[in-house]
Length: 202
Image (cartoon, rainbow, N blue to C red; front, side):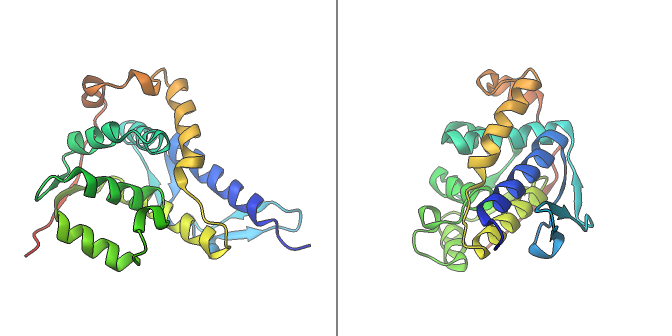
């Protein structure tokens, strides 16, 4: 029998979502060569050379990010970015939302709008170039992109928030910090210690 692709993709998305949001320790490079399809149908996870460990604050921020993406809560996404110290030349919220969705959730046509990846990034940079970006979540972004690419290669495209939003909601409840409890004061209380990259475009 051929591999059950939907089941494989579902398992990979759930496992990596749990690693990221519950454990805070994950393989940031989950490409196809890092999995083994075992004879009994299980998936073997190998090569953790790109493992990332999050702080509690980073893990909670990741939970909020994927809850907000799943809910379509742009206000929360904007607050997360503003409090984290993200800065762009013009402060355009619409461009920021596109970049968040592309970086962490989907690169379907609903985000790229018919452009290829290079055209999309060039357009965003032209519309509102980013100047100060926290890099704490680069590895989780990389994991998201790797998994989306893997799923797309199996002709089963995914949107990360559909899997990771529900996991994140439950983690926040288990932590005693349900999504609805997060206001600006609580975001500041649990703000991670940020590392920044600064950019200057002509």
